[in-house]
Image (cartoon, rainbow, N blue to C red; front, side):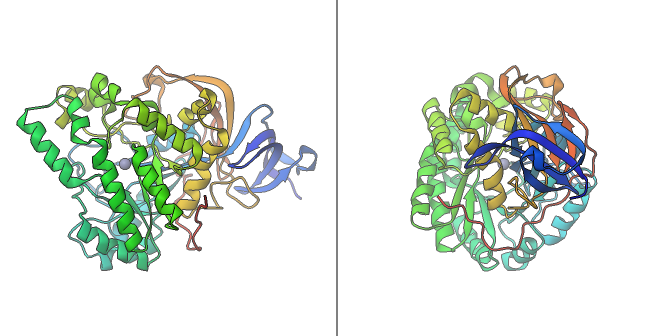
Length: 468
Ligand SMILES: [Zn+2]
């Protein structure tokens, strides 16, 4: 073999199943050799990874960058832009992010989808996929097939009203849309909360003039979520559509997914770092700084979600990065209803999971499965992404499991400039991030360029179903 671009020497390669010491050679953005150091080709650059872990780059498939484009407005702007979000991703060891379709304008047609690819392409440091969406009162037959064909990684909707911009998709229309998705062999992702229960609970809270943050928990109790989980699973099954329930916070919903899978249904469930680290007590104490929907749950549910994730009953971890400006969050401290739901989390995503390994509640193998291989399979990016294999994209991270990192608001790349984990000391941190063979982060500094990140279309190959 001729000389290659880069060799990563003698790191411990970790996959969902195994780990072993090996070197990898990278050329033209691809992995071209894996094996003993003595068998590696000559290389322009060698990185010594002895004593470090070498993992496939993380895929954060639940991100709301939300940079407004084409002059359209949303009620409250997200604080992030593509530049800051993808730099934060590179810092976290995340080599691909998938952006949600509730950016403005909403990405519910192939036309808008294609313009969004163009807008992102000049700006991203890491690779990106884009989820499309579907909303009520639209022509599903006309909109969904072209959107899917354009390369959307998934098709999203909300079963409840969301933030003034996305009306609830109720059962009749949802079932119709899912049948269209089935016909194109598409993949649905659903925000599952019961819209009518939310309306009913809000009436009671309004009657009592409640504006405190505990009322957020009473507005959206666990049953609101797991009732919708059951219905989502049922409608997906009847429409014969593959799908995933996003950001679950309730073990009850995970159990429903397990029953459905045992009956042969291809349905998945995702959770987020905040449901693994924060609880309802934080909501009472910290108000808008930890407001998200579904809300944070009691300690016993948090521990059970950790357990289900560690056991393989939850398939994917997305950060649900939803960055709002510090001053806007501050302003809403006195009134729960005025606070936006969501927290900036892209930059702490993978570090929190590595910290979980050091805390002993999850294995590094499971972290690799849930942050990389599974999302790559679920969103049709595997084996181009999600694995360190011959011919795969060289999306690789080197992790120092011993190194500590204190989360500090002032040092974050996220433009929102704050984190719900400010002050927390984490152990285990990426020290090098490669996106298609290019070093975009090294020793906690950004070294990549804007525009390196490329759109990742969902592959048209057959299902990459995860067996369990
Ligand atoms: Zn979300």
